[in-house]
Length: 113
Length: 115
Image (cartoon, rainbow over all chains, first blue to last red; front, side, top):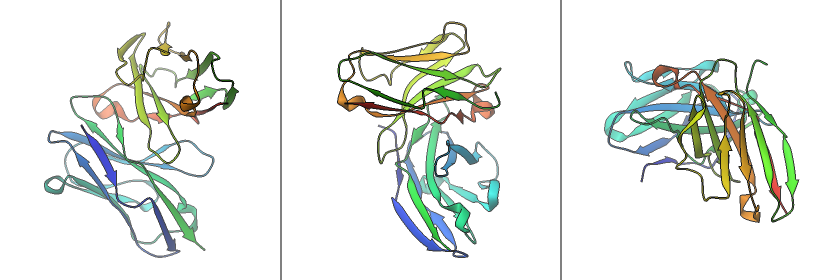
């Protein structure tokens, strides 16, 4: 079965630290890839997405992600985090032949001021 | 409204009762999705509508769950004979369509608690 794995369930960082959240998926075909963020008390919002082209995609709020096809990975990065980045981050995969989003379990990120 | 609206935001019901959860998608979005999110997990797909028809209901866990979208806009998720295991946040999302328009916009969710 198709699945998405997020390696860390909880991450705690200090402000200005660099961030990398891992995401791996199991699906051999063409995929569309997404990172969503859920700030405390708010709904899920799209951070960035990859459909095709440059495997390094830039999203909102200084986030970026790199699609490495050979590793089935789509890791999220940010060079310098802020306290306002405290949120839960979800990686999601959409097999191109499908319309469902298959989600990872999420990573809770806490930024210490 | 500007976003996806879900009502109620919270629902507490007794085991065995019937509940309806409502989703008002973004105007003009033809695709509508229901997901269920249990504590500590990512959302799980339940059902997808394209227009009025359920294009894929393979995620509905059993026949106690049913969803409709009679006019291609508002959708209602219906759960009969609720069980404690149905407790979760039920998320609705809408999008313009497929392909590059697949970006799904989510509502705040309905937190269902079955006691």
